[in-house]
Structure formats: C-alpha cells, structure tokens
Length: 231
Image 1 (cartoon, helix red, strand yellow):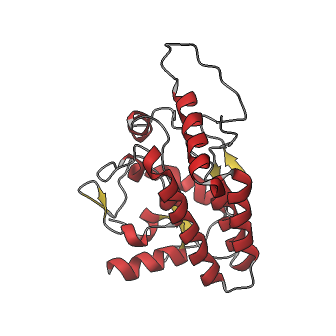
Image 2 (cartoon, one colour):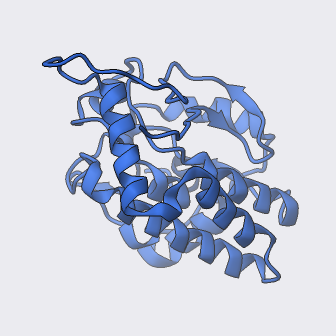
Image 3 (cartoon, one colour):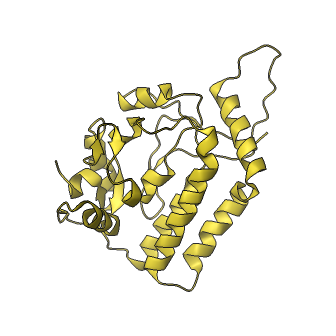
C-alpha cells in the first residue's frame, strides 16, 4: 500500500496556507478491501501510487522531495534551476502517465484558476506570440483571493479542448493530474462542485519551486494566467 501523502491546498510563494479547499487527502492509512467490493476512489488512488513507486522508485516521496531540494540548493543560476525543476516535473508526469485518466482533449483543469510567475508568462508570450500584459505586483494572499474570480473561465490558451502552449505551459500545469478512475471528479470541480480528485503529492516539487522564487526573486509578480493574457 502506498504511503504517499497529498495535502491539496491553495499555496502562495512563501508557503503559507491561505485557503484550505474542500479536497480529499491521501494519508498514511492502510485499507482492507472486502472481497467482491468495488474499490473506492481512495483505495484505487492508493493502489495506483503504490504501483507508480514500484515502477519508478525515485517517485517515493522522500526521494522525490530530495531531488527537488537538491535542484533548489544547487550552485547554478536561477534560470538553470527552474529549467531543471521543469525537467523533473516532466519526468514526474511521464511516471504518472499510465495510471491517470488525463488524456488529450480532457480540459476540465483548464477552467481552474492558474497562478503563474512573470517569467513563465514571458516564456509563454515568446512561444505564442501574444503580448503579455504588465501586471502590478500584489501580496500572495491578494493574488490567491483574486484568482478565484477566474474559476470556471477557460484558460486563454485553451483551443478546441487542447492546450495551444503545451510545450511552454507553466510548472503548475505540468504537475496537475488525477489518479481517479475517470474524469468525473474533474468535471464536478470545473462546475463548482466539491473536489473528490485524488493526486500524487505535487507539493514535493511545487513548494521547492515557490521557495526558490521567494529566495531569489521575492518581488516577481505572481498572478493568474488570465491577468497576464486577458482574452
């Protein structure tokens, strides 16, 4: 049984828990299944996580966290470390691939508020050719509160249910996934329902990324992709 733990929460660059969402948490619980019973989404996700770690031992929470922290603290430029975290995220994504219902054309997550850093917006602008708006810097808690205005509004780069900037998408999008059996829970969240989506612990990569940015560029703008690229 997997021993991964996922705290699904809204975070800001300094790691504060500003808002705890109504989302499930996979904790260190051993579940016994009754014979002939259909496994619950919780049990299914736990089983998937165990399989993922069996196939890719480097995905064990302590090892994955260690990899991210080594990148954060290595003697390299900020740009190089951000690129290394992005590569680690892509590797993370590949390990999850066979175990997630996420597929091309599945776009429910593209209707969720997406907070990105200005350097990510600049990369998207170069890739897409779209002009990036200059966004005024605000406090992390204000950025999170403002982000909720965009819940249910499609990403500016969603085209025919596909990401038009897939190769240049921000780190938060690269990390997003589901370990549920299908996309039913994702659809519910998109329409404002409670989150019953189970995931691997993306904070193992995302939080070192926020800490890295906080340490080296504490005044970099952090805002929603909609604010940088208003339709």
